[in-house]
Image (cartoon, rainbow, N blue to C red):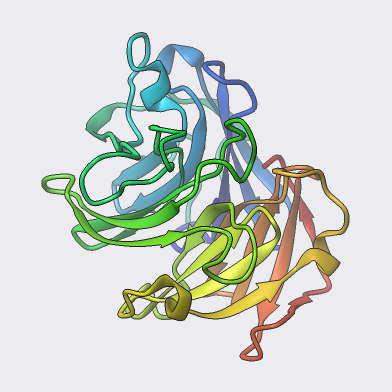
Length: 288
């Protein structure tokens, strides 16, 4: 999920079927659907899991791209040309309510869990299952989501990484296991907050936590300066079906967390206390 300041809309990327059609839903921040974009299976993306817009470019995350590299595009992140297929402009108005879009890929990055600078998986999972993206200057941040292989806790460590786009090298990483911050982790969504990732990045976890991580601190245990437990907001969800996406809208000052199991977007105010999040009294429902 990504908040686009140009159109004032939330763009929610949805991969409901591996190697099938994928969808992007454009919603207002108050929860009204404006357009649905279909990315046909012929575009050869395997499992889309993150979206980010920078000017005339968009970045699409493919969490299972490297698994299907022999028959599909095979990347972890695709840079594509972006011109808004729905014709959405400032003020959140769109000229179409549905559109089909076959993205033109201009660059591909492929991450490997066991490559130099990452070293994730504990020998049980060689794939970097990229589940989110934030693009900042000449770098992007990516996060390695958990996969039951054979269990949800069997492939630690899992890392948030900063990737240099020019050469795909790992500029920085923060690795987590069950002991790093006192509980299991399954990081999925990442977002810049009010400082546009100058100092902090926010990470959404499928156990329904949101972390505020100091980018200047290399030790992950101390880099997570705050964490919000939003289970009381989300309610009961199945394992591995919690926060799937996260974004921040400067126009509202709120964070938006997408929940896989319920297909709900929760609008949150994260306070400085760092223990619980306030549910803003409006919830948009969307496909996540």
